[in-house]
Length: 136
Image (cartoon, rainbow, N blue to C red; front, side):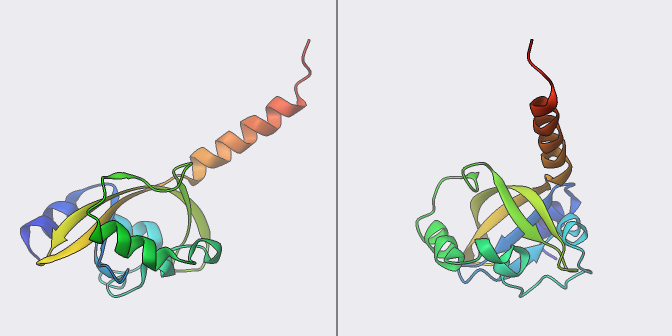
């Protein structure tokens, strides 16, 4: 494991690096735990294997364009929430930020992923409760 991989493996946030074909080149331990994969099992997966089916269409082209254009770092999605799917096929919401990185001599995309499910559940509960409370 090279120095950048060792460093990224130390981080508490889930980190995944994909090539322009959307294949996973690296996933740190936090990412493997978040998605429910064993060590090294994510390598070679398509990034679309980690997304719910309704978000997959056209994603390969978006990844390639992002990497090719060396686009600025930014949160993904307009609401910063991406519906993801774990190794068991269970869905969860994630907050994802993306950037560019050179990894093993090739241009790649790197994403920081945070499980957002509990935050989203709390927001939904508060909205529901707010609708039930009478306004005086």
